[in-house]
Length: 582
Image (cartoon, rainbow, N blue to C red; front, side, top):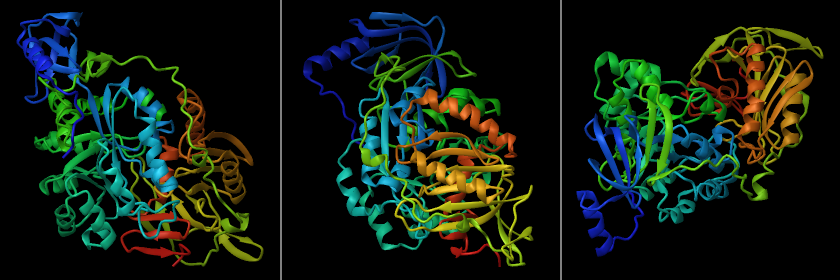
């Protein structure tokens, strides 16, 4: 499935390796007195770990040219993030790898469909080039849905013929999350071409709430994973269908507790489960952790540490056909983590291919194609485009929830005010306005809807990160502040911004495709440390990550109701509404 690039073995070094594995001559490096996690069997053994040429030789009693006494510390395989969008961290891909590796993650399975939706293959190439020399394994899944659906207005179109030349790249593992489940289930021609192109590789899924028969068709088409499960019951449906469930714990979507609690209560076999972050801010990675946090949280919920570690290592490696990763065993690549505290997953040091991962704090931000910086293209945006006529009937309201990115379509009576002699929707403490401004092709389209559960008062919040087409999304309780917020992101070339009482409170510029900062993670952290508490102060619930949650309100593949530049979209009905009023 995946061809591993290995150093050519000659008779001489093969014979030498055999002698080192047998302990007849010294290994290059030996970690002495470790408590070693054996991911194949799910047990810890005490002993020495021998390494040569970047691979493990064996576990037992060894002598080395270099020896490191771990004095009883725990040694586990490098952790694997089974699915993530590096753009959602808000920093450059190389920066994310540096920071997440410090938390023990040594392998990243990246889906660059955010970049591809803005800049096409140039966006994909940027991710590949940025991570080419990383001290970690960075693999890429080819984006399957660019655009995500037939109702999206994005910056590029990625057909099967544009993907073909990537197949020979050893870092391309397969087809990225197939979000257009309908196209798969009905056998739509272009989707069938993509599935056929990657027929011998992994195909990631994105299939929340499919019926039993639709799920059967989806998996029959060769989809092998899904990270969109929000509860244990649906996760089990997918496992029974032969899929791997990638348990997600990101900034906005936190599904780990619901799924792991079900696993623990039902004593479920965990061999079809892995961990992923999907979308997680760099600020939260620093605060909580990365995949090490998923392991820690699962253990807190009652899952045995051995099971959690298998989900974070060998099972993820098997899922993606990475036969050289995920275990401390002879012949496996020597990626591993030394832990001071096992249950807290407190990292002491990280090794990649048998060498300590070096401190790269001062690594400069790489230069990038100037075309990736000028991606906010908006024309004819005026305040009147934010006005929503009130039609004295019930309206489709986007009901949001803390800790989730799913929504409910709620038909409700909403408030109005008189403006220029006519009734218009008037936000209050319960209902606010939400809009998406097309930013790729100067179309001038603006879709306006009504949201409940977001709670913002006294201003507006806006982002050029809005999944997956990444137009500008803005929510607020008055048109004036919403207008200021959109204009601010036009000025900065994209980013996050908060407007309060007619003034820009703070903006985090994200000039790389309107998705990532080129100022470094410390500056990103500095902005978010001020902006996120301010958003909560303005009424957004504490259990809701303001910016990432807002960004998903534009994604028309997650039930039940979304907002796009064309208007309010009813996902299950595949129906666009120019006005939310019925």
